Length: 200
Image 1 (tube, rainbow, N blue to C red):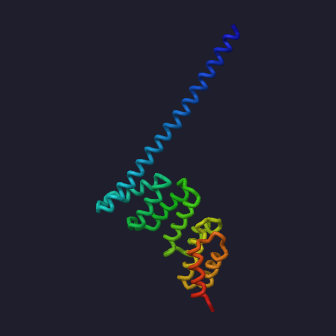
Image 2: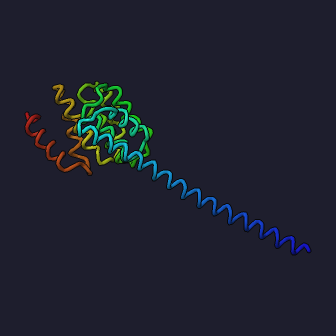
Image 3: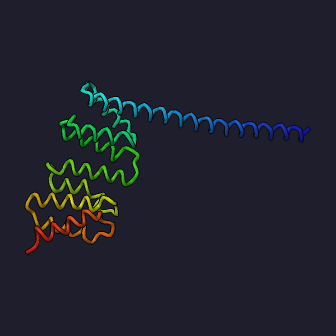
């Protein structure tokens, strides 16, 4: 009798285990389907807004693109921000920087994609920001081994050069020359710049 009860209990445990596994599998596939549908919706919103803008129907384009940015999608959120900037849809620098911060701080991006967005934020701000703020934006890249490090150093060098602070500009240009993974085109441009503009 005890043996029968033990067998029944084992069968119940096995049934519960199988049911739990099936529920986990179902939940996983249900969640994947939900993610895919959501991504498809974001893609459709981005494509519709950009097509409407290019065809002259500009109503609600800004709001639709902002919704795409705020969805924090790793593909379409950056594209939406670039679209807004490239087409001068948002005039407020503060607002644009807020959307850059959503991408940098709240969106799940690959490391170098995130660094590219940080660089683009700095590039956007380079015409009006102070030296300290520009360096603050770029510090995560400058203090790393990112593939965007040489771009960032070059941007800061150009920033100082445009302000006629040649000593500071040269310091940043020279950092590029000793970088192991510096972009070859930027390295060549820096060599030319130093020979042309800093030779005594």
